[in-house]
Image (tube, rainbow, N blue to C red; front, side, top):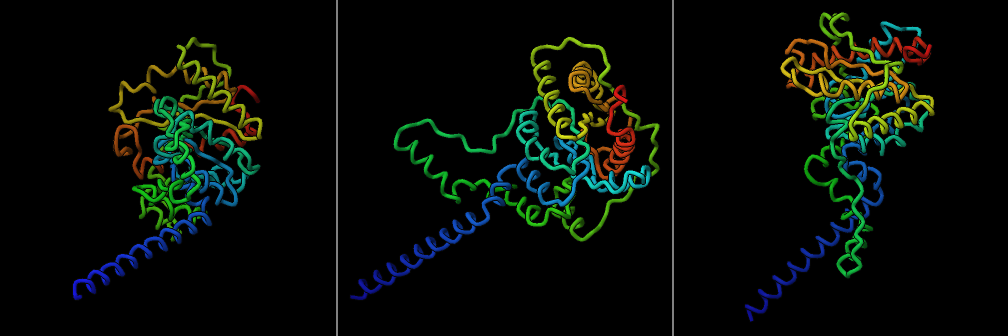
Length: 339
């Protein structure tokens, strides 16, 4: 008798537990369905940046690229330097849409998310070995061609929000949700919680210390450069980048390609040697300028590693980019050789 009562109590507790799990899952499913755009954006770094971009009322200067640009460019500093060196251009807010692991495929796939707005005046696109040759990380689940019961079940489960957006609830992806809730106060370079909190509170980065424009003069490769023979993979990349350049230009956006600076320890980096011909062809085929900062000799104190700038390096590079952007916009958006 006592044993039966104990078993009955355990069964009730189990039933209540299972009912609670079902209610929790149902609530989570309804919540994710109601906020599907938010959770979809959190499943991939590129989609996160595109959604943050959508959250800004106005973006005139757009930065695209890999972690080198994400860590190395402060749009707010660029805007403030532009106000100082070219006040006649007015206020030009920017956004850093670069993200770790970006690739050429991602640049092309995300272009429709960035080129539809009429407020973007110039797009500064990173040109580097990882940006060009990284393999794209897919953000859409692969559709199964399996006609078996298991295959059909896998396809059907993609209609369940908890399953479809499951990547948003794991690991680093979960940390992207706060930036999607209040994106208008973020410039896009803030990857750490402390940086995001500082931006939300209105704290602004300090200008570069003792900026020397002569030290930061890039090699400007123009569209008038002579044709160069490329291997098959580089030629295909140059064609894709040229098509991307034409896409932005057709929508009234000035495309610029920028090669980020490198530490002096990276003497044999491809950007300093083997990719120079590719840069020239991108400029020629894309009818745009390439700002090559790779040959610039800079202090190690500007870098946190061989290819990523630290806080002071970000301030320095942002000022250097602002100077070049002012030059282009003062010329009516026309690169050298087209004025």
